[in-house]
Image (cartoon, rainbow, N blue to C red; front, side):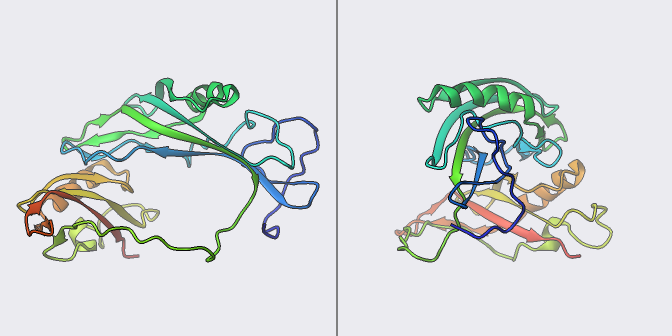
Length: 254
């Protein structure tokens, strides 16, 4: 439980589902909130023909709108996931949607596609040749409603097995991606991040920007610069070189 850190809205109409993204205070004086979270499946290797994938335009088209699918009481603590497949046009507008992994709760399964078709919009994907593209996305829609929690340091830590990682032969920095005086980017661009597919010979065969600048020509050029970076490839324990993914992040000097 946490103290109130920002204004809250009381839920005054009994039995009415709460508004998404608008906190309220329960009868026990604990703060609660109902929201939708989206997780796009990015498990595939970077596509060699793309420099950026479809990105949610949450700034101009917020999707925390309307009401939660069901009414919520002080005793409730909901966490429900619905898996959907969403087809998006090159304009960034969803064209079709279907439930691929139902939650088993009809109110949520019936809510996911109509809600996201109405509110969700995307920045289009971008090819190396400068063509804006749509695509098909697998999205996990997570519905939550209940007490707001904060993460604490209590609890154990599980160690993950180390993965073989490639290593760039020279640092990837602002100069590598083209940031600097006269780069022509708007002040709102604070940096970039993404992933590279590094082959067993140390060459880069794929570049996908997770945080693009949304300036098409710059994003294309940035990926071309990153494709020219040479790596010491990832190696198995026996010394055998393998292809692997390399994640990067670069801040833009201000």
